[in-house]
Picture 1 (cartoon, rainbow, N blue to C red):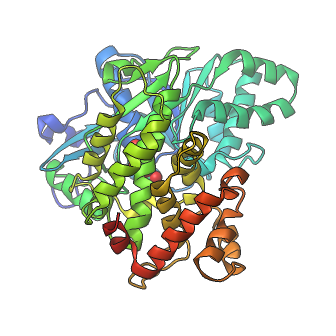
Picture 2: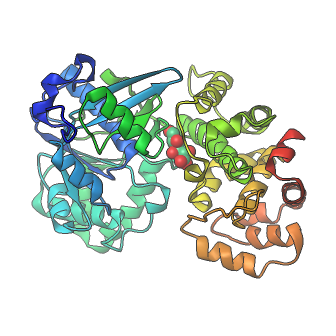
Length: 472
Ligand code: CS2
């Protein structure tokens, strides 16, 4: 079984090193969860928690995972009896373990009706989602994930198939409430009986999720293959750290995720803001500066002279003063730990990956910090540098002249704003501050803030990101 073409399958498990084997018998648990969004993050986060919860407390909480668009991972998992490995990589050590939490995989684009039927299946008591910030759009188009979810809930209401919790696991403030509102509009349009059933039977708990899971590379697959002795085309690599804070609002039960280290709470709000503004805020900051400076990864960016000083000042002087710490959490220690996690040299998290979708990421990660600091009467020079770095990044050229990709749902609007911008950095700043989908009017018309952004964009354009950082 360990020849060059051997792949991860149930028949290969007995030959794996003991510490790499799944915690539960593959296929032994029944289905209880549908997950929408079969990306690397889900495989290294919710699936891992769920497998551990089943290993510790039993329960039929197997997951049918739905890939919205891409077929590749669906095919790979089917060929591997629905199993894959997670490589947890610390600076000098990697643990590899096969996860057997999945009980099915589906391809939504190829079979939307099958997914709607699954959401109306009475065995399913929890739906989780990782579909990225940009998928949170009104649910009136059935080709979108939120649209599919709305159709599924309507089918469930018609079938009176039992209560359900729909759990957003994306990096948005109040993600559950936001999802409930989006789906709610479509549900209301469908009329009273369904609307009432859903209001009485479906909850949308908010959650804060955390684990750094870079896009899979050939290096990940090679590492896992070496360790397992068989090929695994659905393997993922992640940092060892993980956190999951969950609003405890499950009308039909849930896995014992707390046994796997998740925190069940009445209010995720303080964690939400801490994680989004600290981890994700610093991530985006380093991503734009690093991409401009030609640094491939977040860890390499943090190694630039003064990059850590800049991040620490942004954190201490601007981010932390806006936060209400969750009970018992030392936010300064949390922030230091975030930077240590970013420095993990074995996690090759590409700056260009984190830099995607900036128009959706900047508002909750950076602009909220600016707005709250401004409301406290303070200025925000470091966050202004981040906005300037994004504004230089979207112009599409790194400091060494190499092209930078603009992978953003608002790319067309950004490009047309730039095409009509006035001369010089001030023209660019004014054109981009005019994008109301990104910058709220009060920030766009904040003259001291605008002046700081113009000054930083001028410095970045003249001297480049590395030299600008050295000056902080
Ligand atoms: C990152 C996140 O790509 C990004 O925008 O900031 O994916 C980050 O790695 C996770 O939120 C960590 O929990």
